[in-house]
Image 1 (cartoon, helix red, strand yellow):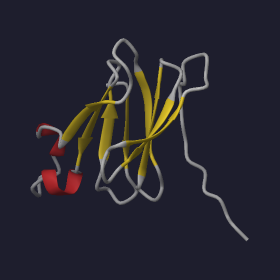
Image 2 (spheres, one colour; image 1 turned 60 degrees about the vertical axis):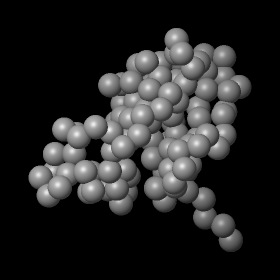
Image 3 (cartoon, one colour; image 1 turned 60 degrees about the horizontal axis):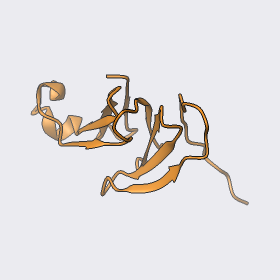
Image 4 (cartoon, rainbow, N blue to C red; image 1 turned 180 degrees about the vertical axis):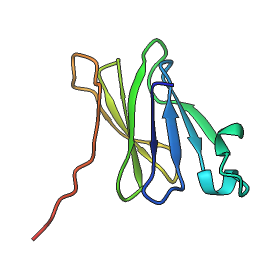
Length: 108
């Protein structure tokens, strides 16, 4: 496991591996009152970055609607946390993308 994050509402725990794979758990529904959700199989497992590349970081947005994964393939990818579909591939980088974060904007 390369990186982990948990959502603000504690309903999503994500882990990414150096094999480009993302694992998703729901700590609330999967803990059955024990708090030991990691002893359960993940709810979902998917390849976030191409074969041969590493996942380096994962960050869930403050509103819990998006996941950002970064990788050695030079991309940061945004995933919809309700469908786990890729929403955007930010791939203009020429080097590894080591980290990602979300920024809240105030409008007005």
